[in-house]
Amino acid sequence: MSEHEGEGPAVAPNPAQEAQRARRTVGAFVVGAATVIWWPAFTLGAWGRVFFEQILLLWAAATAALLVVLFRQGGERPRGRVLATLLVPTLWIVGEFVGSAADNPAVTQLVRWFGAIVTVVGLPTLVWVLLRTVRPDLVEAVPARGWAAAAATVGIIAAVSLVLGWLNPHFLQCEDFTISGNSPPPGCTPAP
Image (cartoon, rainbow, N blue to C red):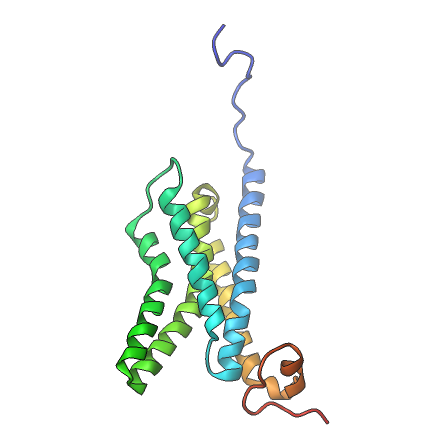
């Protein structure tokens, strides 16, 4: 008796099921990326900066992903692009140390903006890199137009969140920020 006897014939994937699986993958990416991007974009609009804990959250997630990618068993070895992407938040931390040592306001501001850009762009990119690394079969099942629509959706969420941050005085009060444990942003509306 052969080792494959009794297993039955291999079943070909149903195209309708594959298409549904691809749509769910895109949907999960959009929800995950939008969930992680809205707050940094909002804080950039409301306070003019991304808070350190958001950047450090990205650093922790990217570093953990880097270690997972480096030490996973089997599969294709990670590409240099993937490794470089996952190292970008660490570059921000190094930049913060260099900026502090330089005692130069221009360098400090440059490092801050680098951190904001790394966070706002990096969080959705991190979700994408993880998805491509962990489940390349699902990513490849989605047509390019599906990923373009997903990226546009996440970009719209980030842009609207940024605008909502700018417009916070029109629909939030200073106390909303204080109660939530945040400092009120400049220009917030006091309670009546």
